[in-house]
Image (cartoon, rainbow, N blue to C red; front, top):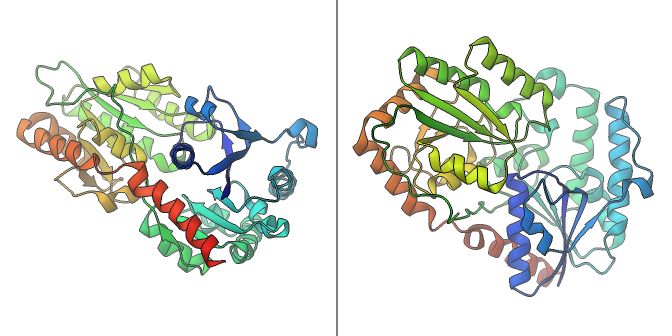
Length: 389
């Protein structure tokens, strides 16, 4: 079996990037012939372990793909050229093309022209043109209308669709009229993270949140929570880890909101950090808050739980499929500042409740390995499709 694992870019440390990395490690351990194909790659910006895997990167200079897009239609055409060029890099004798997420639109449409045996599309986030929570202006734009036509033609060329949460399966069925396999994401057990316990005799409590800056991260609401806690005389510090480069406009909105509330001394945006700083921020944290809106999965939730860090999570995050409210985590309305503030206050004042959530989280996550929940299932799907012919 020869597998081509395709991802739009390897330029950040995100959930999809971790997913690709763990799949590659599993394929390597099972002696499967595989190779990663991507448009952009920087080992200093993504997970450094990618250095241990075969990666082919699109040379935009050679391919003449450096022109800037003036409008959405030109952007679509540029992607058309990029995806075609990336497709040309994949050898004809590949048995499985496993495409991750939505950054490579046209490649899937053309994949059958090279007579690849099977194409598997891993959808972590539904394409923008199908996201019901986007503004009507975006959904009804000519660009999105064209994309919906493209994607509905694409799925006819795909042999299997996989998603990481049941709600995305439901959306695939509704909007793309295809079935999908649900393979949950796994969890890394970071041995450098300390086991958390109730914080006693703290002058200030540390709240941590992580995630690349996008609108759905809901950081504005989280900052409002910090303001509410301040009015209650609860001493808290918020630390946010996550690249601010992919949506600079949203990052500016977050910085501006912090300044308007005069919370610069209580909120620190660290951006993308190295492993040492990442571990340091997790180890000093007392609570983890993940109140994303319409988040497909939420890998960071389980990474926090793995070290017993009590986690407050939005009810619109896909990860709650594996969670038990007020047992191993606390599930909240992501827009309810008062409710979230109450939960934070309760956890920081009730040692028994804190330790109960912490212990249950620490125990539960040990079963959520990447091999068990994701990689082994993907390989079985590959084998099934090839056997099916």
